[in-house]
Image (cartoon, rainbow, N blue to C red; front, side, top):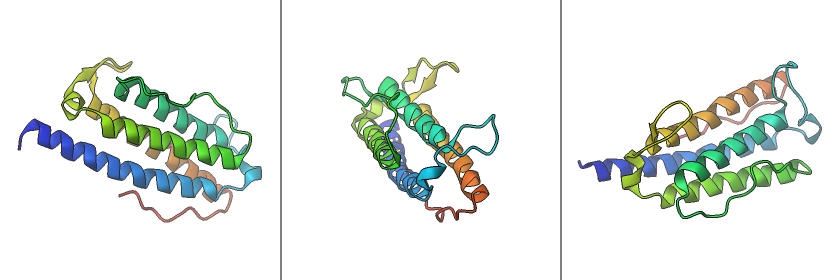
Length: 158
């Protein structure tokens, strides 16, 4: 199998998992009561809302920086929602933006190394980082839900 075909398979696999990841996080966030958005297990941890906004900001930053050569307009990553419904809409929009950017990426460019604060990385590695970062913070939110005695949604990440 040539490199182009491998990168196309990886890109398609990422996009499918990305959509499932979005659904899972949105379902998890929907279970959090509106009055619990400021909940944080300890003072040194982010609140629920801070976790969700951090996930969103990272998605938009990585997507825009590494997958947006055409300069598609992306939402402001520093926007703060007025309420939970707006927060969920902003999260969903961010997943959609990243999905669009990665789907439009030239598969040949996925193997190219790009400058990253942790050293040069390929865009494929950036795609892995996008997913891993969401998973990391979603896992923290699952612990928050359990501490609030709220049953997390059943895992559906594939």
